[in-house]
Length: 338
Ligand SMILES: C[S@@+](CC[C@H](N)C(=O)[O-])C[C@H]1O[C@@H](n2cnc3c(N)ncnc32)[C@H](O)[C@@H]1O
Image (cartoon, rainbow, N blue to C red; front, side, top):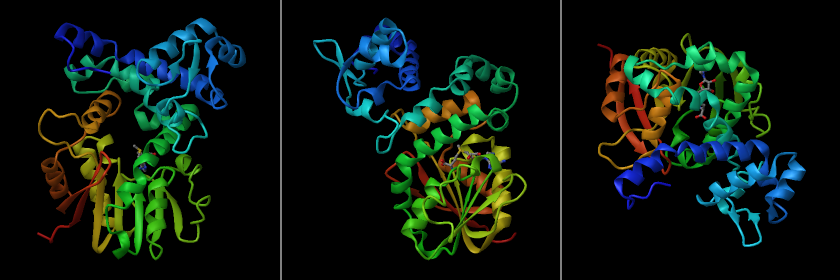
């Protein structure tokens, strides 16, 4: 979207209205346009008639998205699926529909619209806008909860297999995915490691949509509900994937202490999060980091910051294992007792 070759004044204009792409994308996904193009190209008028929406605004949203390679319009005014439009279909393999509905949802964009408040105060305005902190709202408002947890599962599906293949889980007997959502990552790990047993640990309302049984793993994987600030199921591998980045250092250390207590002797805590590199190069962790400060009290971290947090929870950073995704596996063992 942003061409570095643009002159500076056009460059900042382009950045300033970048949210319009997000808005148009969210709208056409919510309306379900991509599914209607599966059988071939169609005009905005024909799509609008079937979808019960207004043809002219639909055409304008699609025309903007076509400039970003999501849909393309031919000379007869018919819109086609492009590869980036195809993944918006509900039944597309690796569909990104739910991920778009989550990432471009008001729970993220409304607080991001008040980022100056966060920068001034150091606190997200999320509670003022929605009435309760992020994860409380997901429990109180079932629609928001569904959008987030399905979106999170769809978003994570793109990275779960390559991350699971980047680490030797074969030496563990009992692998606990703490805050594991619907279980997509644990299913990949258990699928590659047939001798291991698993525990999927999350809030009760999240586990209602767990995929463990559908994956045929209920014989090897338990579901456990609870609060990871209080306790976690015991095991020799405790996974925290995309968890610590939701929280302040103080809360993250509290979660790590709980994991440390639940860790069997010789076991490992695996924090799977972005590890922010130095320098100006783009990194998806830098976008996620701002998302975390807009809607949550969280942040992405550097290797050194992980090392310090581990030490505060009586853990020792062993190594950082890169993966083909935007996330790394930060491996920690129990620190020798002091
Ligand atoms: C960002 S999602 C990550 C989900 C999953 N690990 C993944 O990578 O897709 C954070 C998860 O933490 C869970 N969670 C938040 N607070 C929790 C708590 N206090 N106790 C247990 N789980 C919690 C949420 O329900 C959610 O599934």
